[in-house]
Image (cartoon, rainbow, N blue to C red; front, top):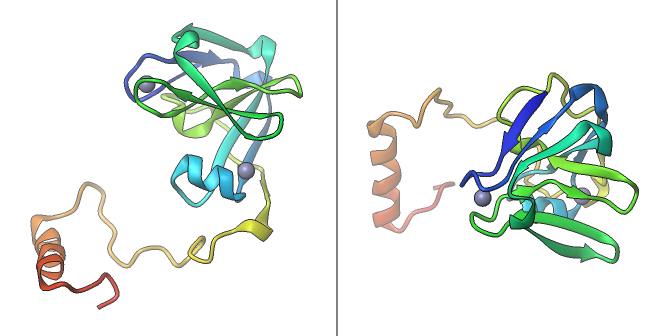
Amino acid sequence: MVKGSCLCGTVAFEVDPAGVVAVVGCYCEPCRKVSGSQYGVYYQVGRGAFRWLSGEDGVAAFESTPGNLRGHCRTCGCTAPIATAYGAIRVPGGAFDEDPGVGPEVVIFERSKAGWCGLEPAVHRFEDAGPPEFWRTIFVRLFAGGSARG
Ligand SMILES: [Zn+2]
Ligand SMILES: [Zn+2]
């Protein structure tokens, strides 16, 4: 079993990786907004392979399109697992605390992809938060009224 949780720890669950039926990356606008990133990553898990450890009642549901519920933790706002109308539990990839051993195998709604998605990897790459000298240059821009492209 592979464990997952939300940021505040209210919501916790475990998944049997053998019960993952699909791993989907989705570029649709709702997935982008919910994830706050380039695309949503969702593990479609058979009900028998998913178990709540805590916080099921701490998950709020939002119907983003008719019949499509999205779950989030009432306390910290993280995207949370939720039962779907088609019989699976949809588990957000970012919620896993352990490696489920399988990543996205299909990407959908490419036509909805934002223009900035899939741009070249950043020029500045750091293994940690980055050195103070780098962030000083950002603060110089901030207070000079410049932009990231300046
Ligand atoms: Zn939470
Ligand atoms: Zn989507």
